[in-house]
Image 1 (tube, rainbow, N blue to C red):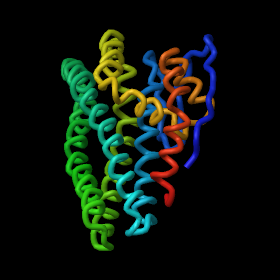
Image 2 (image 1 turned 135 degrees about the vertical axis):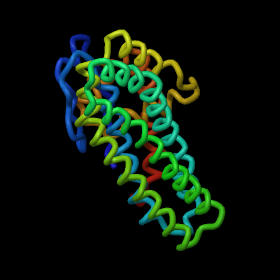
Image 3 (image 1 turned 180 degrees about the vertical axis):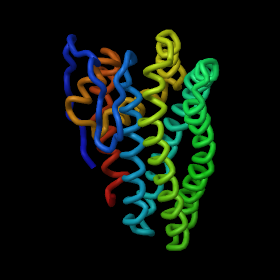
Image 4 (image 1 turned 30 degrees about the vertical axis):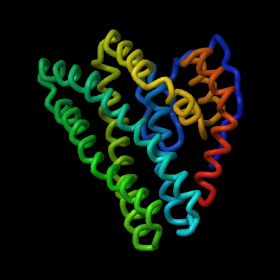
Length: 247
């Protein structure tokens, strides 16, 4: 796994071009700065690839690493659930209302599918949590095999969902979501995470980003984000290396 160096954003950086990160399927142009959205998607792809490799390669009897993986899954799942709740509350309902008003049936189908896919992913996430808990409580090859299958199912489902969202739903957001709705969702995204979760979230978001994307994210998030990363970033990376030492 890669690490992100400490970088200083310049005050003149702007999100004047869509961010395109490794694994991302599309970067939709438009009025809204989707940097945070694409960074989060990058984190989901990165994490599930790491969990899949770790589950397959971590020795069954390495109790310390399985405990770290179990705790680390909690952070991943918390970010994913928060992201989906934000979309289901702020993005999709407003866009569904607007697309129905103008009779864009294909757009209605896309947005309806976004919510349905969220509900399909939830049970897969629960299976992974249960599998990691089983590996901590009673590590054995059978539990590891079950967990491996669950993580692979989750990764396949989430990658398909992200592709669908990036190629169809986000372009609709750029065309149809009012600026005030987008700006309010950005405020909510920053304010509704518990403050105790902020150090994890900052380290999580910047981990493995290309340098230019890390600078762009820090410029967007502001000075407090940069300060938190300076305080916790190295420690976060050390723990990440311990957690995914076999990935």
